[in-house]
Length: 412
Image 1 (cartoon, one colour):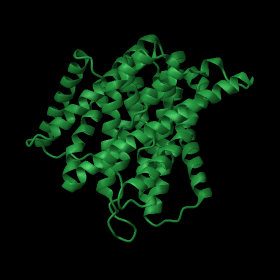
Image 2 (cartoon, helix red, strand yellow; image 1 turned 60 degrees about the vertical axis):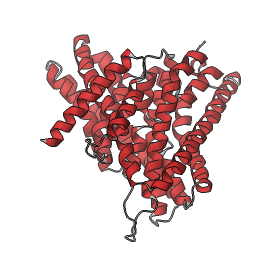
Image 3 (cartoon, one colour; image 1 turned 90 degrees about the vertical axis):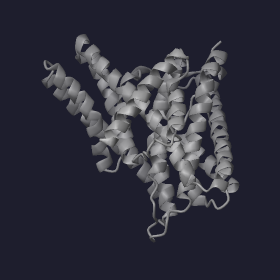
Image 4 (cartoon, helix red, strand yellow; image 1 turned 180 degrees about the horizontal axis):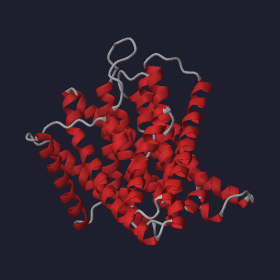
């Protein structure tokens, strides 16, 4: 009964804070984070440690599916060059940049541990990008790049993370095996998402006259798709994204408008609740992690997190501007680049500033092993989790609060 009461209280706080955010013109995720941190420090608030598996299964599939469902497939295809560059190349570049920074900055940090931290913080978050950029009036092209990148880059980050953790636990790193693993994880996720999308399309046509069954199937399948992909050790994220893209195209052609509207209203409520809850829960985690840190280490590690946040943002800035120039050069060289895929320097800065860390980084950090294969404790586990959550908070609060101003300033 006590847990039931706590859940009701958290839901009430989330709904109230979401309503207030709109009234005071603040991004909803930013206010929810601040409220979560504040509530977490209250003595009466019991500890609520998140299970990373629950985050990945309960929150990620519907949020990713909804984002992929609403993205323009045509614009996604037009911007595939930029999306793949940021979602794959930039992820590994950021992993290396954060690893070098952490190794030379933080006492006791080994190279394998530094790469674990880099992999955790390498990917931007679809939920954060959509939640904070929503309503800012960004061009469709910019929104597609941001959403497309953050929908795909989780797979790259998870592969980098697995390789780094394997190095910490004593498993030898082999380059060709790591590359093969990445291709299998990515390709396997795509295949499963494609197959499930075809199966769901058949079921939707078969039950097309039963609205409740159709909507229920569309709600259930993201979870099923994610679980099937993870069971076969491929990317559940990519599988759900492919499913969402496939269903988006199918619904516009095959589903009646009335059913689409009914389904849309139902999904809007689900996404509103899940979106709000996840940001509030991220805020609630910070006080819990803070209590596990040595008091003398707290301020130095907050400083390390601030520096890592700036480094990640700097790497992103350079890579986005480089992509802008590469696209322009390719277009002028008569290569197969659509004019619609080009963007200017102002858009480059908005894309850079909109790249925030979020729930995937949090889930990966909380899912760190507690022990090594030898039975010894995983080194610096609390410190890595603390740094990860601090960087997520710096990213969401710092960039999130200033993003409306940045968009207004650079959209002129």
